Structure formats: C-alpha cells, structure tokens
Amino acid sequence: MGGTGSIERNIKSKKVVEKLFVIKIGGNVIDDDASLQSFLQIFSSIKAKKILIHGGGKVATKIGDKLGIESKYVNGRRITDEATIDLVTMVYGGLVNKKVVAKLQSLNCNAIGLTGADANIIPAVKRPVKDIDYGFVGDVEASKIGASTLQILLDNGMMPIIAPLTHDSHGQMLNTNADTVASSLAVSLSKSYDVRLIYCFEKKGVLENVNDDDSVITLITKEKYKQLTDDKKLFDGIIPKIDNAFDAINSGVKEVLIGDAKDLIQNVTDNTKGTLIK
Amino acid sequence: MGGTGSIERNIKSKKVVEKLFVIKIGGNVIDDDASLQSFLQIFSSIKAKKILIHGGGKVATKIGDKLGIESKYVNGRRITDEATIDLVTMVYGGLVNKKVVAKLQSLNCNAIGLTGADANIIPAVKRPVKDIDYGFVGDVEASKIGASTLQILLDNGMMPIIAPLTHDSHGQMLNTNADTVASSLAVSLSKSYDVRLIYCFEKKGVLENVNDDDSVITLITKEKYKQLTDDKKLFDGIIPKIDNAFDAINSGVKEVLIGDAKDLIQNVTDNTKGTLIK
Image 1 (spheres, one colour):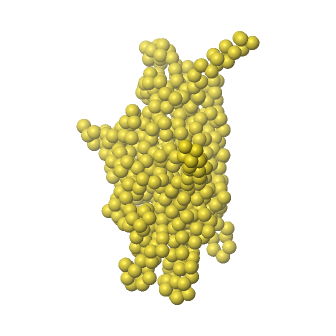
Image 2 (tube, helix red, strand yellow):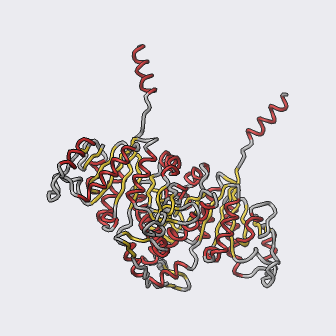
Image 3 (cartoon, one colour):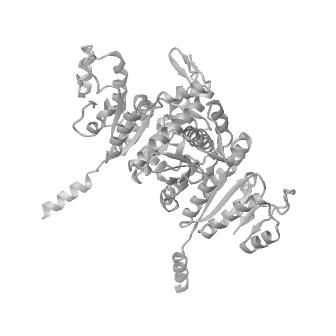
C-alpha cells in the first residue's frame, strides 16, 4: 500500500510537459486547393495542441500583378516596399489566413487566424539598412514573443493559424519569412511545451540521394550530421534548413521534422516518415 | 461587528456586472487617416473592456476597381459574388483590420483582430434566395455567437477588433453588415456584461432639427420615441437605426448610443454628448 503511495507521489512530482506541434506549410500547399484540403483534414485530426504557420503562395504575386505592384528584387532578395506590405497584409493576413480558418472550422477545428500584430504575439524590428534596404521586413524580437498569450488560446481550445506578418510596435506591419516565424514561435513555446517543429516542404524529407525521393534519412543527430557533411552527402539547398533546425534544438525545441505535407499524419507520431532532427 | 459582516455578505451576494463597450465605426472614420488616428487614440484610452467593429470604407471599392471586380447592385442592394467575398475578406479582414490592430498596439492597447470565422465567434447562414440572390451574404446565427470565447479574450486583456465578416461553418466566408455584427455581439454579450452599444456615425446624434447639427436629442426613451414619431419630428433615415437600437435593448443591451466618433471620449461616460437610447 505504501508502495502505491510513493509511486503516486513520484508521478505527481514529475513535471508532465505537454506536446505541442508547430507546423509550417509553404506555398506549394496553399496554392493547390486539393493539397490544402487534404492537409487541413489531417491537421484537424491531430488530437494534440498545434499551431499552423502558413506562407502566402503565388496568389500574392497574381493579385499584385493585377494591382500593378511590381515585385522588386535586389541581389535575388525580394524588397517589401509600401505597396507590397499592404499587398501581403491583405493577401496573407486576410485572404489566405481566413480561407484556412474557415476550412478548419468546417472540419471542427477551432482555428483562430492571427498575424504577429494581433495580441502582440510577434513584435519585430524593421530590418536595419546596411548594404540593402529590404523595406518593410521584420526581424523577430525573440524575447518579446507572446508565448503566454498563445498558451491562453491553446488552453482554451483555440488553434492559432499564423500568417507570416509581424509589427514594429509603432503601428507598422512588417513582412517576415514564414520559416523564421515558425522557428521563433517554436523556441519561445518550448519553455512550456515539448515542441516538435514540423517543416512541410516539397520532398518526403532530407534525401541521401537527391535523385531518389525514397532515400529519406529518417534520423539526423548532431553526430550523423557531421558525418553526412564530412562525406559531402547533402545537397547545398538543404544545409541551411538543417542548420536552422539545430539552432532551434539548441534553443530548447525538442525535435524538428522535415517532411512532405502529405505525410503529416505519420510525422506527428513516433513512427515518422520524414527526417527527424534531434 | 455583526453589521459589517452582513454588509460584506450583501456586497458579495450582489452580482457585480462589469461594463462593456461595443463600438462600431463606419467608413467615414476608416477612410480618413487623421480621423482614424484620433479615434483610435480615444478608443485606446478607454479603461473599461471594449470591442470594436469596423466597416470597410472606400478602399475595398478602390482595390476592387483596380482588380476589375465590378460592384453589382440589385434594387439598390449590393450583391456579394465570389470575387467580391474574396475582395472584402482581403480588405476588411486583412488590410483594414490589421492596420487598426497595429495602430492600437502602438497605443498600448492589446488589440486582437478577428473575423466571425476566427474561433467561430460569429457563425452565420448564407442568406436564402427569395426575390434577390444576395450572394455570399451571411445572416448571423444569434444563438451560436461565441460570447464565452470573447469573454476569455477580454478577461485576458485582449480587445477584439472585428471585421464585418462571418462564416457558414462549411468553409465559406460571408459578408455581413457591420451594424448587424455590432448589435448581435452586443446582445449576446449582454448576458455577461452591462453593455453600452455605441454607433459612431457622421452626426453628433439624433437631431431634433435636421438642419441644425447642434440640436442633438440627448435621451430617447420608449415614451419619448413615441412622442417624436407621433409629432413626425424624426427624419426617415434615422428611424431604422432607432428601431434597431430598441430591438437590441429589448434583447438585453443596457443602452445604445448614437454619436460622432469625435465625441467618443464623452460618449463612454455618464455625461454623453450624443443620443442615448434606453
């Protein structure tokens, strides 16, 4: 009898940390109605707490073209001028975000669509002008992220759906890379949750052989990563993604998964199909 | 000593109902940067709990013109076709809503921008086609309004800023008149709060003499209203607004105020400048 009591005490004294999935989808999912619908069906079926960060897809460029808003690039980097920040606020924060929210509501997922300005969840600083003036681009103020606000929403059964927009706390919306928004939120929320950060992209995972879509490396640890880079096994494009994943892990995120949106149902289990980085 | 105890018990047993302001602004405030800024300054200074519902202003028509989206009317009523619902979702739910939210954040007001789809706060039914097909227009499902969700946000220091958009719970956004959104929310929240519903419009209040902007009728009771209509003192345009105000009051709203956005600072006190209806 005494034994049972001490087990109970042990269970109670052990801090139970809840799981949270922070999931990022890109333009390839947003742009295709069928892909989006099937992704959202899987997303809504996930029983654990979850946050979705979505990119904008091609619709911003299409609407921008019609409005005569030119896409400007300097050294291959897009510049966000005044017309462009209005455009992306409209398209990402309005059209795309509410389309996703309304669809999730129809799937009985209590989605709440937000930008970084809403409830001050992602304050940012307009990127300082050095060689290039990126315009209205925001660098996230990591220490000021409203993790406790997101926790209030999550604890009350709301699933935040976040457009990649931030604000400068002086009344200006800013454009921020969706991958960065996802990793910043994941890091900030890892103080309260066991966070798995999931990047949905156009491949099943990190490939051992770039020409073979089924050659997914299912687990990358720090040691494995060193070995893969020493052996020059990885294609250049994936290296920054893995570096960013380890940055997030070093800052508290439990694990990062890179995989196909279609495989999300497996990728939220222990039996992942994509590449788990930890 | 016993006396003090019973006073304490009396205070505790008396239900203290908190004040809530549900404030609607129209296009005239949204369209003019200086008016909007000064309105938001006053709004942010209100210490009580508050919700803002905003119309869209002329910017939707301007952007629609550029995108080649024609405004369609039947018998003077605007029709919301597929292109138009996307347009207003973008402009009201994205551009205008986030502009207001970012400005309020800069004024230390913890605004959270929402449409009726977000957290399922305003479910609606697509208006049935009778003589006219209004398209994607939503009639609010009053009994399903998410008052408890709004209360959670308010109790946690967030001020909901609501675009006049609803959803049909099957994945479709719908366009709903901002006055109707405001009164529906006010009625639903009146179960938990002492609600003053404030309609900001382009005059100081209901005028005794339509040509004299200073002839504001400061108080309209049911008796006074009967007398004013019997005496044919009211101009036609204001009668539906007053009828709607009494509908809200009959459904639980404590009082309705009609006044100029510029006078909001007085209109949230007991010493109102506009027309108080109760």
